[in-house]
Amino acid sequence: MQTLLDVKNLNITFEFNEQTVEAVKDSSFTINKGECLAIVGESGSGKSVTALAIMRLIRSNSQLRITGSATYEKKNLLNSDESSLQNIRGKKISMIFQEPMTSLNPLHNIEKQITECFSKRQSTDKSKCINLLKEVGIENPETRLSHYPHQLSGGQRQRVMIAMAIANNPDLLIADEPTTALDVTIQKQILDLLDSLRRKYKMSLLLITHDLGIVKKIADRVCVMEKGIIVEQNTTTKVFNHPDHNYTKKLINAEPREKKLTQKKKETILSVDNLSVFYKNTNSFFFKNKDQDFQAVKNLSFEISKGETLGIVGESGSGKSSVAQALIKLISSEGNFFFKNKNISQLAEKNFRSYRKDIQIIFQDPFASLSPRLTIQDIVSEGLEVHYKDKTKKDMMELTKKIITDVGLDPSMLSRYPHEFSGGQRQRIGIARALATDPAIIIADEPVSALDVSIQAQIINLMMDLQDEFNLSILFIAHDLSVVKHISDRVGVMYGGKLVEIKDTIQIFDNPQHDYTKELLRAIPQPDPRGREERKVQRLKN
Image: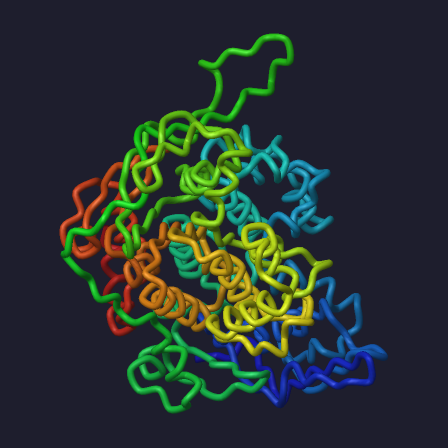
């Protein structure tokens, strides 16, 4: 195969506060024409900064030192002048960023942003932009051109980013975590799109991800990075079937253990009857018509037993998070929900407050849900101070230390602030805060969606351990059935605000009834890389 990009002895070093951090250490790899190379590793391993260095979106200065070479068309991109780079960026080598909302200009419509991608020497008319949007599978492209980024869904924004990246038919497309935080069905669509575009335009693809399921699906070769070092690189099949390095083995085996399911009938602790959530139509100030309100949740009914985990799965907009917020009365709702046979849905805030200790929530984004001004000690003990006013400060300190230890953190960290912790550690703090009041039920709203696959496994295993220890009931909300499978006794599938199917976990996976459930199952990446070529051939035949 002909080499397209040759990276040799890449070193990236940051210096700040008299400290030196080696983000990338003596890394070398090649990308061949037409192939997909995946760089995989946990957050902080050096994947994204490698891509930024290749594109020269970061460069050496007093606090950053980059050495080595990245050779494209006999030119070292790392020391090329700006005029040469302008003829390469976006034209020969394009990049798709992780978060399209922060990459797209909120002040410009989609047409203007796509038009800017074309060379000044090219004549650009509206039809070219329309054809690009059609190419990436955006419906009603004529209408979408006039829209702004905030008017599009996450998947649509990512498709726009892909359209901009392929506008000049590049030789190499760099995709930096292109499906993070997307629904599993949208994720599959984006991956299939990237793979088909690669084959159609004979592009090379550098895929940066922490998700091994994605790698298995479309990558030809894999580089595994750990703490800035490429510890292993080989064909996808060899890496997954015969990994050499211990870190690679750790990533491959980073799956939560299987939950031991029980068929015993237990006491019902939470019962939900015809729950509905409406969001007010704010388009008209003078005329309010309930018929025009958006109904996010439609007559939902289910039960959770003591010590049971009920998984609720569905794509973004299906109403999952609205259910979670309604059950702890963060938003108003209609219908009824009962805690230990007592109707708590109609209680005023003053009377409901005592039940907040029994029903706790873990949020999706632990950084946003933890106050940056409070220490971990203050965050975890806050609930204790509200609900256990009879306890002394010494008692609260000892209890806080125990809770922090229970979630796998060192009590010596209690004086630190949230920004001093990793994503996985912050999520453990969020779990500790929820446990502090000794709840009967924990509502976990997408608690692992933004975490590395290995950290996901740690958090899910931790929640199962805590469930066994404290006999907790858990409502586990996610968009990925493969995650829900490991922790749930039963699974409910939400679509369009409705609960379209609810069964034991095994039955959902072995015998799904609803078409949407079947679609979610099909969207889970295939675990066998050996079958990738066969699947590609089959797709081409179809």
